Image 1 (cartoon, rainbow, N blue to C red):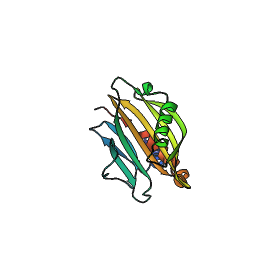
Image 2: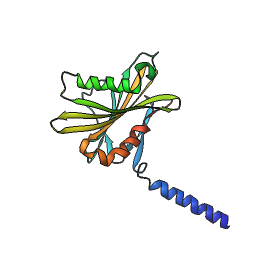
Image 3: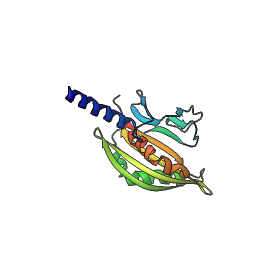
Image 4: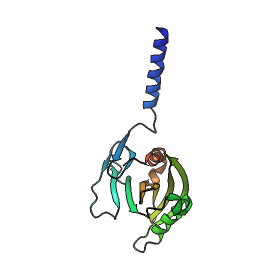
Length: 185
């Protein structure tokens, strides 16, 4: 009887502590069964209907209150024979994205690659990229991206906020960016 009470006590403590975790509390799961991916997103974020979006934009979410905070998934075509390593190292891919932003003649953005690393989920390689983007005079954004390839598609998950809010949301955004993964489809 005492063993059972002690066991129930420890189970209750474990559940209570897990629900108090600031990095996992307040997140919901989004799954796209058609395109085969999933991710966590913060409570209070809502899907946005994007009119005239850039080609490949599959989904966009935005914070209901902090409207400058958003995430997106972009799906692009790549050679079906290529995997992520064929596109280069995490740093190579990060610099290539950075150059696309910086060399766009229709944009005044200036991107800086802060970090690039590789992780493995279920035998798939993912590149995690962190950027700081200058939009104009004293206007900066902070972006995290997770990139993966599968079956001739390049999936890019991006979450961003203003630089002034970055310190407040950095841990949460890192959990969200790391949650992006492909599912079986």
